[in-house]
Length: 149
Figure 1 (cartoon, one colour):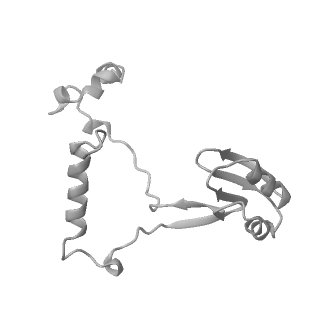
Figure 2 (cartoon, rainbow, N blue to C red; figure 1 turned 180 degrees about the horizontal axis):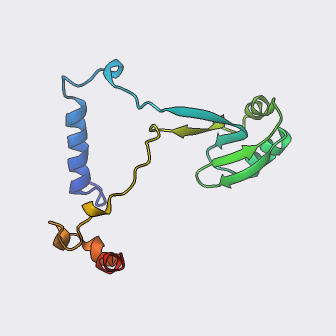
Figure 3 (cartoon, rainbow, N blue to C red; figure 1 turned 120 degrees about the vertical axis):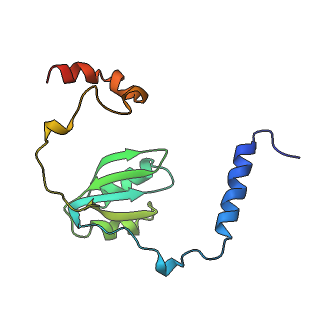
C-alpha cells in the first residue's frame, strides 16, 4: 500500500533518476572535469564548523579552544568561529564537538573579466523583439527609465 503523501511526480522523478543512473556510456569519474577556480585564499583566523546541531556544547568547545563564535545556526549545526591561536583547529577537533572544522576560504570561481564601456546605442527601447513577452520590463518600469535617459 502506498503512503498517500507519495505522489506520482515523486515516483516519476525516482524512476527517471534510476534510469539515468543505470545507463551505460556515461562519463567515468576520472573523465568528469571538476570546476576550476582562479584564486583561493584562506581567511586567517576564521573557521567554518559543522555539527549535527549547534548547541551550548559547541559554543563551549569554541571558547575552551581559545576562540569566539562569530555566527552559528542551531538547526543546521553550522557556525563560524574566530581565533588567532595557531593551535585552535587542533584543540577544537580534539573536543569531539564538531563533525568538521576547517579554515574558512574565499574562492573566486571564475576569472576576473575586463570592464567594458556600455555602448548605449545597442539599447533600443521600444524596438525589442520580445518586449511584449517580458513581464519584468513593465514590473521595473523600464520604459519610464528609458524615457529619462
